[in-house]
Length: 172
Length: 195
Image (cartoon, rainbow over all chains, first blue to last red; front, side):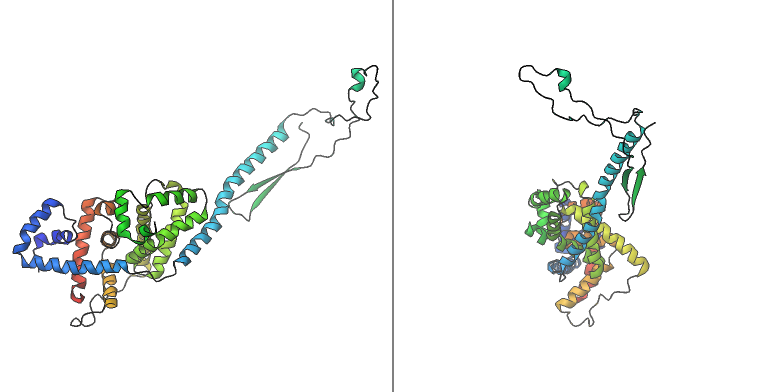
């Protein structure tokens, strides 16, 4: 049907894809070769049909794809974002718990914050001595039983959350 | 931008000049990276038509093409961090589309091999009408080896230059030229009788 030698070049030449030197060689050959001329015509027709195919519209509801993609993203996104938060929160709480449990504490129960029982009488002529004005600590209440510390650790699975209860032992 | 996504030929030309698609995509990609789903949806609206059509040409089956388009945009979302918003998004999307279609095609080949495809007109003496021509042409494209098919679809249907196709497919221009040339000759032989 055509020159085997030029066949591949013709297939590129019809769309301007042939490098200039090869194109010049083919263009010099074409006028004298009816087979190659026929191939050019055939390729032009098939290429035109391909271009028409490109223009063909997609008759589908493209919104359906978008909705499915967005739905998948919404289900994936909280987990992905939640991971960072879960790690950060879990790590922070674990560190806080460790510090709270391991730090040495005085054996005596902590004193409550100072509280004024009664305003000191104020003398106009002479200011009250500093000692009188100093707030006196009230009797310390017995320390309440320490409440356990709750550490919440998130996992891969949003349905699985690890709760870690740390009981306070007085730090000794 | 609408123009850019609707006409791949124009889009390809603009890619070469670094023009139209870059600026609008850049803002949308940046917003999507920040977690803005509306911006991401806009990106899908702009590109899904071409992604869907390319997938259909590569796979031949509308349902497979729809699955492919979905997977392409999911991959885009998951890998947004790697996308450089200063560059046009189209080549990246086409590369992912080709890869996704190749994966789907491999699975299908294993489970459901393509049956023989009729690529000749029912009566060779009667010219096929346009819809019949399209059917035959589509079948002929699907008969091509996958690499030749991808090169032909990107170069001749989507209008990318040889250099752009090489960039998208991760091969050399010489390889793309060879694939495109072989594909055009095969298509011409397969459909020559019905044109």
